[in-house]
Every structure is written in structure tokens, then in C-alpha cells.
Image (tube, rainbow over all chains, first blue to last red; front, side):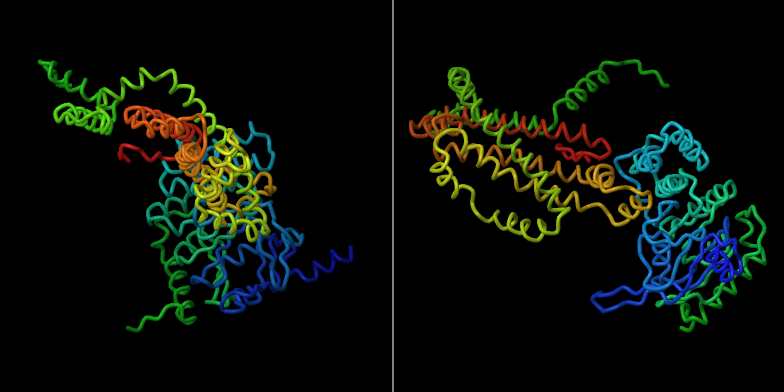
Length: 273
Length: 272
């Protein structure tokens, strides 16, 4: 009980789903000696919130994601998910990487079902769910197609379905649309928001695209160049469901403009030439 | 939907195309070469003890079949046994090299280095140790075919990307699942590249072993026929060895296509 009250006194928002406390990461013994990837970072994420981490390449965004998944341990600080400290690979989540990481020997459906197979879930139930997920992202008819027979956008959709099959409370996405062409990217952003609207899922979304972060998020976390730390957190007050046309909305463009200014002051953009 | 009044030329074309689809162009080239060979030997009257015509070789295979077949079976079993044992040793060894630091650092470099030892040079030694029977032949076949299987299997098992392993761990996969559901299927194409290469080497191994010391087998027949200047008989044995080698290669390639249906197959006739 004491511990409970203690935690609560620390937490202004006791509803925090993910709580990152003074987490830093130093990689030891590289060729250039120790590399400080992440300065101490603190962040609370509410349940069901869509949070984007926005920053230039090499600012430690991916490191932060790896720390959240428990695949890496922090050099200092704590990560708690629902009050429980993360201290090993956390399997109560879904991950989507920039590369789709589909297994080339499995068809689309079987790739989604991998999630259930590894977890030893009921396969009949899982298959019905996988089929409905695939149909939600317009992949009906491609269930048996091998990854090499699918386009990049289709493959990434399969990998999103795979990450959602077990209804994780937390979805981690590491620049999932970074390798796609602009039009496919637009569609996948819509698809992702559609999937999120249907479930009470927290999304931790890493990107280096300012408009993408504004378009998708409830909050945008701005990170500085390496060693990364949080420079600013911007609430995005735009109604949902969001539509592509909203990107011309003055409110939308003003978010984009102010974020661009922030990166300018951080020296990420230099406009003189 | 336009109607074609005269069908005959189209049908003829179709038949030719169908034959073309069944018989790959390379076989036509081979046939042409054989005809050319036959023509040269016949027209220029080249004596059989220098270069027999394909027809003479075919005749030799027919007449000599009662001796060719049992010897071919001996060579075939040396190859089959040696190759199977090589696979049984090489694949688990590759797994242990990929999973164990000790094996990787203390044993793997030696396996690679050992490849600089010419197998032919070791063969007489094996004869001394294992005698005249099938054992030294099988050992040489193993030595020849084992290496490409190990190397390619190790490469394949290492082809698993870090992201795949992250994904596996985020799903809570145990080591067993990582091996069977990620590493092994990912390795299969590379393993089969090694298996295919090993078929060719195992045939070479068996023949070399029979050259060094044997009293049966196709390699032995070639030596005897050579000593008697029986060129046609030598060709007959060579053709049988080739047939064995090709069939073996074909079986492994067929197995590969069955087991790795997700891969686009490299075609022998050069069509992507």
C-alpha cells in the first residue's frame, strides 16, 4: 500500500499507461568509444493516446522504442508500463519496423498468424481475426500471396495486421511508412487511424516527417539531434476522424510551421545558401 | 474474337512451340553437337581407338551393359552413402557453429583452412588405413561434399536479420521457436545451394577414390579400359557417370523446388 501511495505521489497523472522516468542510454565500447544515444528523458503516455516521436536521424528515437519494448535495457532510469517495471523483453505489445520483416516463406495470412502461433493461441479464432484484419486494410484475396508477390505498401499492411492480431494494449512503430512512396504512405496513415479508432490502444510512433506526426498524433514529442533529449511536446488539437484534406487546414499548417521553426532553432534545418 | 479461316499454319506453329517447351533449347544444341561429332568421325574415317563415334559408344554401352551396370551400382552406392553421411554431419555441425561461440571460433576456422588440403593427396593414406573396400571411397566422398554444405548452411543460418530476432522476442518466442520458425526456413535456400554443389563434388570424390585403388566401380572400369586403349568403353563409363551426376543434381533441385516454393527458381535455360 505504501508503495502504491508513493507511486501516486510521483505521478501527477495516475492514468499514465507508459511512464518513462529519466531514461538514458549509452552504448559502450563502439569503435569511437562510448556513444551517448539518449540524454535523460521523461515522458508519460496516457492509455489510448497516439504519441509521435519526431526528430532527425540518429537522435535516439529508435533507441527509445527498443527500450520501451524491453529489447534493450536503459543505462539509467526506469520504464513502467501500467506501473510494472520493464526489465526484459516485453511481449505484451505489437511492433512494426520500417522494414516489413515479413517471413518470405509464409503467405500473407500465415505471416499474420505467426503472432498467434508463437503465443500458442487458439488458431481457429486467430485465423478469423487475421482474415478480418486483412480485409480492413483491403487485402482480401491476397491471403495466400507470398511477400514477394505483394507491393511494399501491401507488405507493410500485413506487418501492421501481424502486430495487432493479439490485440496488444501498446503498439510501437519505428518509421513504419518511411520506405513507402508518398501516395501509399497517405493511404496507410488513413488505414492506421481506422484500426486505432476501433481499439483502446496506445501508439508510440516514430517518424521524421513533420506533417505525418501532426496528421496522426494526439501529441508530438520533439527530440533534439544526438544525444537526443526532449525539446518540446506539442498537443495536436485537431478533430478525428482526420481526413487528407485536413492537411490544408490553417490549423494543421500552423502546427507544421511551428514545428519546422523549432527544428530550425535546433539547427536541424539551415536555410542559408 | 476474330475468326481465323485457315488454321493449319497456326496449328503447326503451336506444335513446334509445344515441343520447344518440353525440350529445352540446350538439348537441341547437344543433339546438334552429337550429330556433328558423328559426321566428323564418319566422314574423316577417324579410327575407333582415337575417337569413337557416338553410335559406336552407344553400341558399346549396349554390349557391355552386363559389366557396366554392377559397377555403376557400386559407384552409385558410394556416392549415396557418402553424400548422406556428409549431410548428416554437416548440417548439425553448421547449427552448432552458429549457436556456439566456441565452435565458431575454435573449430570453424579449421574447417575452412582444411579445404586447402587437396583431397587427392589424402586418398592414398585412406587406402592404407581403410583398405581396398568401400570405406575409403565413402570417406573421400564425405570429405568432398561436406564442405560446401557446412559453409552454405552457416551462411544461411546467419542470414536471419536483427529485426527478425527482435520481432521473435517481442512475440515471446523461445529459442526452439526462433530456430524452427525463423532461422531454419530462412536458411533453406542457402542450405540447398550447398546441397546442390555437393552432389557434383560427391561424384568427383567417388571417381577419384576409385582411381586411387579399387577393384570395382566406374572409375575402376575407366582405368582398366584406358590401360587397354579401349576408348569406346571409357566413353561408355564416362556417360554413365554423367547420367548419375545429372540425375543426382536433378533430384536435389526437384526437392529444392518442392521444399522452397516461395522462392523464384533460377532456371537452367536462362529464362528468369
